[in-house]
Image (cartoon, rainbow, N blue to C red; front, side, top):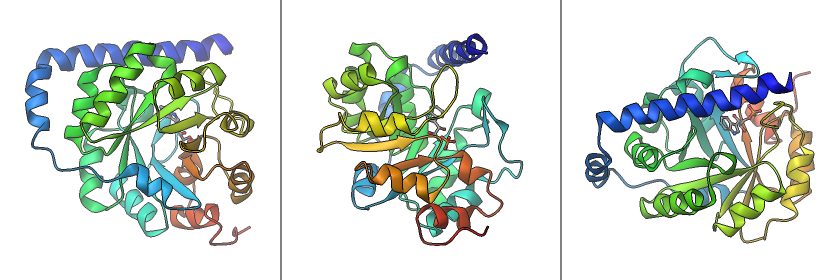
Length: 268
Ligand SMILES: O=P(O)(O)OC[C@@H](O)[C@@H](O)c1c[nH]c2ccccc12
């Protein structure tokens, strides 16, 4: 089992690398760099998280390698509007097609429908994708420490800042956290999902958040199911939460979000 899962992580990496090589060949980075100059300004992702005591980044994710198809009514705009109406602080949009059923186009159509800042959820391996994210209408990108070399992480963080994008820097363990902090990450995502086994454990966020200085924002990611989960994380000083599956599998997405925010008592 363990080996099979490890292979999926490697598969994602290889598949993304092949995609990026192809994209780079079709549009040289210099061209892309020129295009970015005309992109509209970004919405402030960091401020949106900082201004609430309990900030939910609600995710548009139709499929995952561990759970398969999460939802069959594929209406990303409807879901994003539902998130906005029911109290989300930001929206995370999966743009990886092969493993998560995402589309780059979703960023564009969701951006036109809602006013919240958008996080592009993908596997960033190359600066090309950072320029592309800006073109697609993202306000923030995910940088996964486990996928990047130390110098890449620093370089990519700098580039995100230069382009006006925010970066959510994702870590899974203490060593990755140290690397993220050393690189100057301001928003640290602590992923409760073990990348090899895909098992989620909220203790990962509870334990690692203790080592994050107070001037950085911590986002607890993955495996959050209830208001009680959120309260547990809040008691450790965490105030931002990235939630996908629980919302995407709920029959009434809006109601589920209100429940998670403590605004409504669960139906059963
Ligand atoms: O669906 P969940 O368990 O609520 O998790 C959301 C989010 O944390 C998860 O989708 C995620 C975290 N890091 C990622 C990196 C790539 C793709 C997806 C992810």
